[in-house]
Length: 453
Image 1 (cartoon, rainbow, N blue to C red):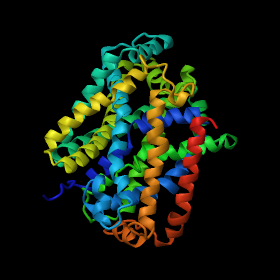
Image 2 (cartoon, rainbow, N blue to C red; image 1 turned 120 degrees about the horizontal axis):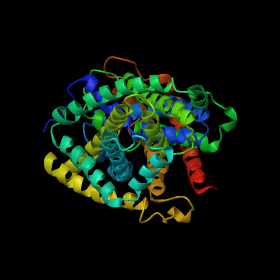
Image 3 (cartoon, one colour; image 1 turned 60 degrees about the horizontal axis):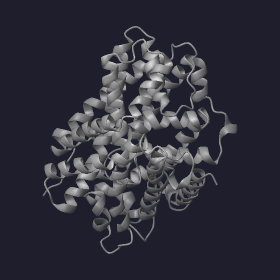
Image 4 (cartoon, helix red, strand yellow; image 1 turned 180 degrees about the vertical axis):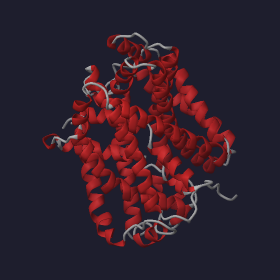
């Protein structure tokens, strides 16, 4: 059967960017910035995107486009006689599943906040009362399960249609709407009292705050936000034609992703300083700060509802992209129709989100590895962000640059097919010898940071 194709270049860029743009930008990035030194973290993060994220993204796209198959069978196709790397192909779908075991529920939180905003639940509420709304949401596992199911069902329904009629069409409209609204909200955020202090915290780096933890988390965030190392980009590479070189396309996607992340911060951090919310609040940056901001402006109820609607779009675009990866791998492995596969994946993912849901209430006393303050969400994030993303990216790098895998010559030929910016040949020593060492060192730093060693 001929492999499905994306209809347009714009569709590929927005779909791949949609995979990258999501909770990593509007939830996790501001949270990490607030907790890890503001502008210092932002500076290191941007450096990691360029030095680490870009070459790995080009490699992942190249492997997917060359193999024309899901991540499950990429290594089988490109190097049939070299079986050592196949293990990563088998792990990739499980990494995507693990990511969606908490991502789907958080996307449900955001969609629920859209409903609450639309109903006017935040109107005339004090800061403490808005905080109470968030606490009440986390304490209700059945309601969280309901909204998790809504997100999973919607995503699997879209993915059950053909690539062009489902995933590509929906993502285009969501991404364009998201970008327009975020710019409008950022412009307004810069007019708030105290905005200058918020911008200084956010964009003015304090170099004394750059330490091993900041570097490690910035590197992990660059992989997390770009969904690198687990085949999330490889699957879209497999749907792409040979008309455009992959470096230029990767640059466009990273620029879009970074634009959304920076814009999200320009919405949130001026508001933090305007409304007296600590920038280290974590989840509160999204669920506590913004409802207060909107309720303080004319027409705030509508703006709040629109914001959480398009935040839902941002989160949902990533859910769609990763579910597509899971469904594509399952479809190729079990030879079921796309619709049947989507139905099964939907049921399985709803069930697999239950540990994260309960971790916020019934299992709130759980301590990951016996560490105080590390709950179910920290454990799941540890496996994805600290282990699978960097180790998967390291695997792609070694495979694309050494004779033990696909090799640099084959990678370069595929990456540079078509019009556009080419991947430079002179960079081979860096990606072959330096980049793997950087990933290994920061992977170890991530482990040390997580366990507080």
